[in-house]
Image 1: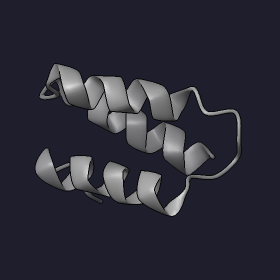
Image 2 (image 1 turned 60 degrees about the horizontal axis):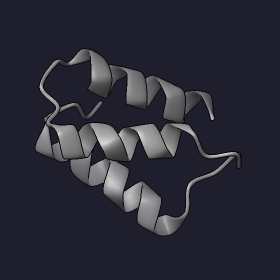
Image 3 (image 1 turned 30 degrees about the vertical axis):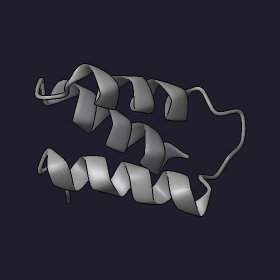
Image 4 (image 1 turned 90 degrees about the vertical axis):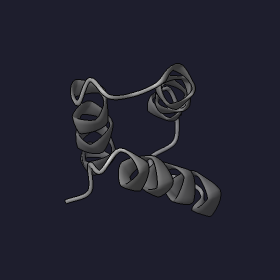
Amino acid sequence: MQLLCDCISRLRDSGKLEAPAQAVLKCLGELKRQYLSEFEEKLLGFIEQEYEIVD
């Protein structure tokens, strides 16, 4: 879960995000479970690649 929080923080702090990407990150950050579904992982990975925020 900490990795997810770190990833979301890096993306938000980049200052590059458009409104739809911010909305997706907001939803992912509000999840009550300790894991992401396969689809959610792919979506987060896509946003990271699109904004070049990949470790």
